[in-house]
Image 1: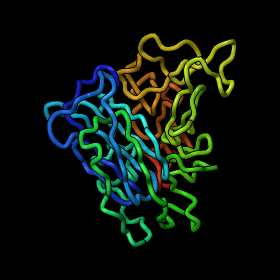
Image 2: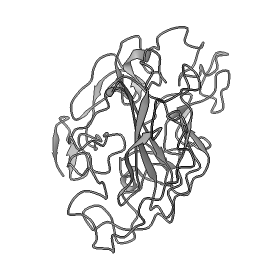
Image 3: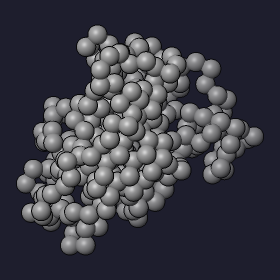
Image 4: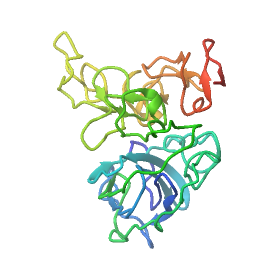
Length: 315
């Protein structure tokens, strides 16, 4: 958990694949109060999704005395198995369409679709089938939120119509899927050969680290694997060159919540110089700037794009 978060006594976990919810607000533990492993690590939950389609998208809400205290989201690439870290933060995640699915993992952030399965009216009329969500309770007493482990998604098939995909299904790929161009990706970012949750620009970070394809992550402190740091400096473990942060993070360093930042603003996954709200605005470098001549997910993408004047308009 991020610093300053009230210790929760229960979690509510939702897990979605490309068709449907596999878990919806499932309580962990099933009864009684949560027993965290430590002050910063709540524990591990086992997710066994069965015949899931595509990537798994996970939303964890932490509650104390029935009141929300923190949230966290995670995308797990299709076919992945292992343990995946998930950090909970006090900031309320953005949910532009108010459907209860945070924009960071919502497959249609501009239209309310709480059961997911793509933007309404764009599915290709396939069988729409799927299992009942599987999900064993081997970890009924599992104490979760920092890790979601042992996910075993299925075939990642399915298709979208011409509004979202070409005939070969080469677009609308989930985070973590291989790509060569941002137009192939659901959220319009192709970084390091995979569809990424954000632009992941700057030194000492990548979107294809082991078991974290599709999630922008910093390189380990003291390393310099891409040779981006010069003058004898190495990566600081927070997505920048230089010494490790001794306190709040500087603008441009990776973050999960505003409480981590000197500026108090965490935008587009980095500490930002201001709140940088609204469509066609980005803080991918640490300074808020206009987005022009391309999409700006989740506020302006799909049938919309940012024009030369940084206005969100129809394509």
